[in-house]
Image (cartoon, rainbow, N blue to C red):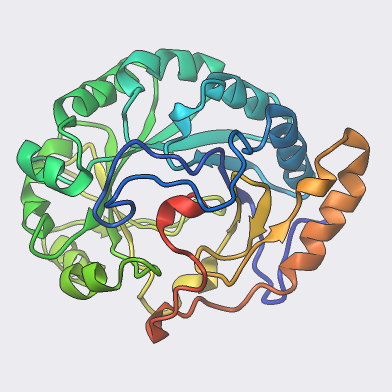
Amino acid sequence: MLPLEDGFSRRFYYLRLSVTDVCNFRCTYCLPDGYHPPQGKVRNAFLSIDEIRRVVTGFAAMGTRKVRLTGGEPSLRRDFTAIIDTVANIPEIEKVAMTTNGYRLKERAREWFNAGLNAINVSVDSLDPRQFHQITGENKLAEIMEGIDAALGAGFTSIKINAVLLKGLNDYQLEAFLAWIKDKPIELRFIELMQTGEMDTLFRDHHLSGEQIKQQLLTTGWIQQLRNVDDGPAQVFMHPASQGGVGLIMPYSKDFCAGCNRLRVSSLGKLHLCLFGDGGIDLRDLLVSDEQQDELQQRIRTSLQDKSAAHRLHDGNAGMTPHLASIGG
């Protein structure tokens, strides 16, 4: 079957699948007041394991090879290990990743690895415990660092650390982060703060362009790497004296959307063509039985033709995304 392709000849090998929008952290750039269920939302309405299997099977039949399980915090689902196992056992899927705040990593890293998880992204916005507490609302840096060590010990060879760049809060810690990864096979990812519907003031006060970090890296011997077809949007840099690498995610950079290769499905079964789009396409009515695969795939293909060439963040338009947890970041 032909791979998924939009009207701009972009092909899509990478699915970000949210399994919950619930999170137990209160990060300043996402859920500063904590998680509150959307008005009218039915309790426990998230995609079931069977629905997850059906939607991933549909994407896999059209060329998807990598699935990232996201939230909220995905490990808050009691059946999360079973979700990993379900996705990993779909024959065409080659890589199963997750993004986590590290809350349960220490206790569950080996269990998840054995279930078929290949890669982990852990959010660590500061190496200073007090500042970490200030940014995330949780005083758990030590436990999360132990979880990262547990993941290395469990056999994970793809571990990435996500840090949202916040001017005046963590931007001065570049040297500390680089020293930390010098002897660790970990990729550090700096993510530009993105404007969302509920974060206008925070964005104005704390946005910092990743280009400044990029220039610092290039002038100190870091070398930009080539991008694989199923990689995320990061520009990756390596240094001959460091085991770890650095990735920069810069959504405000020129041509950021030109290499888009990923689609998103929310925890309620909606297809989102862009993190900053104006709404989702409901797929859930086609996840009731295995016999609906043809219709499911046709709806995804048809919807993809409406994908825009680029987001509108430069115009201050974040679409209908209230915060990053709402559809899995």
